[in-house]
Amino acid sequence: MESVSSRHEGDLRGSLRTFDPSQAVTVEVAIDPDLADTPAVQHTAWMLINLLARGEGIVDRIQLHCPAKTEVQPRVVPFGVATTFATRLVEAGSSVGVVPVSDDIGPVDRVIVIGRRHPTRSIEATDLVALGAGWWGGITFGTSSAPAGLMSVDVARSEPFGPYIAACLAAADVFLRIRDPRRIDATVGRHGWNAWTAHSEPAPSQLGPVVNNVALDSVGLAGVGAVGAAWMHTIWATPSVTGRVMAVDADKEGVSTSNLNRGLLFRREDLGHEKAATAAAAAAGGVDWTPVQGRFEDQHPRPSLLISAVDTNTARDALQATYPAQTLSASTEDLRAEVSVAGTPGIGACLRCFNPPERVVSDAELRDRARQADPSLAQGLAWAIGTDFADIQRRLTTPGCDAISDRMLAQLRNHYGDDAAPARFAVGFASAMAGVLLAVETLRLYIDPSSRPTGATARTTFQFHRPDSPHNSTRPYLRDLGCPKCAPGSAALAPWHTKHENWSSSAPSLR
Image (cartoon, rainbow, N blue to C red; front, side):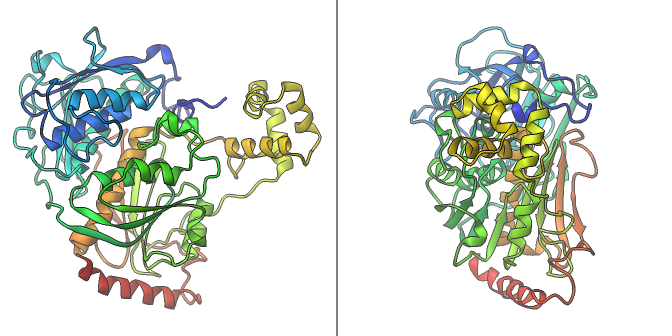
């Protein structure tokens, strides 16, 4: 039966320790009392609690240590109604409905400071310090003084990018110190990432430009799953960003239990509701969202700027067949987040390049796979559909054409996927990072499009196994020579190129 932890229980082909909920830790999130009212600290604290609150089997309980009378800043916490920051964090974190969040003070396993000092402890008595501002975010652990780089961070900056990156790094450290046997148990170290320069920076070289009066125009988001919801959350939290955005999702099941481990705008009370409408309601304000239940390729007129956050190659193939004027895309793979900015048509990689569509399996193959699976799968199907174990076993052997058989096959297709493979590993901090970097590249198009090279697609990757790796960077990405969607001489290439050129020439007028 599906659980919140289903998608992060895997061992990544033996590279992670076996998932063991008995190893779950209690985490204290302590907020610097001198900085608790600043945008940077509030963004960092909320995103960290949002991520930890979804860590079923990893985090047992979250304990908040925060000044009681600090007021919550606007567009920081999308859930709850409390006006004080501490109460709002507990209210919003608890509403996720997975890991308990409270302001009780008691024994803890991990202590994470948001800011430069702990409210009552010495800094060396903490495990981790996290803070971000502007476009940079980082973590430091095992230090006896204010972490290098954090003293110079302008915590008055209101962009959420750096704070969210710091939160992702901190949440990853909590996860990996439990699951990754290769994790270095050093007592000193620091990691940071600058989303503007797309490089690892333990201390910020710059905080990037201030986002000011960006109006998103003719923008469509395809896929409001984990990455798409993180993109919406980040855009919503960025001040002075307005406009109209179509948010499209075709998942007929809506928000599922396993979505709660990484869907930043989804809570337990949202189960079964349409993803696009749920995310749009949570991120109301600033951008005018138009939620749509359906496929992006079926919408007319289609927006010129496509934000692709779909999670199957079949969906990417269908999106590329619409040949949007400009495409940004993001995805995750295991513990890696990846974002691509499409280059010139016919030169840069398109959505279909290196992404062959999954094969669609037959109903008979789904039933055969389920018959060979552990009996707990059939038991879970019976519970979910409202029938008994024997009935499910009969239907797995003898095809039926009634409503119960249809619902059983829909559950199996959702469980195995259209390529008849188990659901892929997915964890909240990787999905959040992908969504944040996707928002960064979206706003970069309006602020400084010349910062990305023309011609080849620009692909940015970030691997949480090695946050300081030189491979975490932006590199050019040429088209797949065997891709049928962007082959030289294809009938679609010339009109697609024209659409791209027209959008590029008119884009400066949007800024």
